[in-house]
Length: 261
Ligand code: FPP
Image (cartoon, rainbow, N blue to C red; front, top):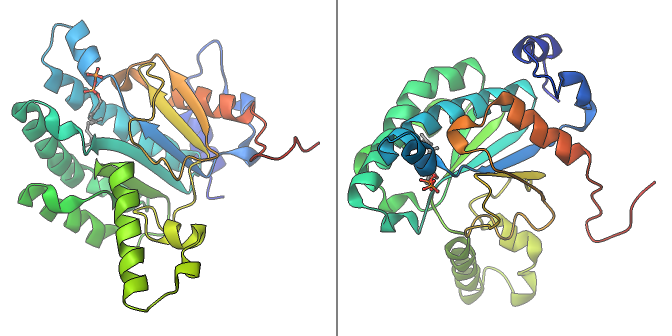
């Protein structure tokens, strides 16, 4: 637990009527929270703005989610920023998102340094524009020594593609005689996923009310608690995050077993 209680109290000083920091059990903070950030387009359209403005507002919400996760002492925060299916969006929107990923990363590097956040990516980055890839690599290099929270950004990520890739790699290892077919167990599969080495998420948050997984972390979410909120991503703030943690703490996790007393 890397939580700094004074910083956390200061961060959560301005409590709304329905929730306060004391509603949270600080000894039971989820280690890994994952977020499907949804609703940027609707947020913008509801204001008569271009969808791109929703993504720009989404960056502010993401910065707050990263800071909140650090303050709460999470080991990892992962977010779904761009799926393998998102290439089907209009080219203008895809270009804007790729540009936004690159510029945001450069802009936020000081925050990652200040908060000791280590960056990693989930997904096939080879298909991204060169500029975006270059900046991503810079982010990886500059934060490689950081020992605090891991921030994992899923970009050009699709869970089925990830599982197929793991199967291909394992099949190649078997064909090359490096491993035997019996060695292909759950641990071996997990080690070939983009998330290798990360704990599975304890809590998945999805904004904007949609009740689906959208090809996200199908393997890793096997025992994860889900929290869906109608709040659109650009409106999702630190107290919404705390509400999700409070809901998580109200669940009894059984992992297919019985309730422990
Ligand atoms: C979902 O809203 C959001 C995305 C597909 C993109 C996520 C991007 C950000 C939060 C902005 C920047 C991120 C980084 C990493 C810098 P949607 O467009 O699907 O919204 P809709 O469902 O209302 O159309």
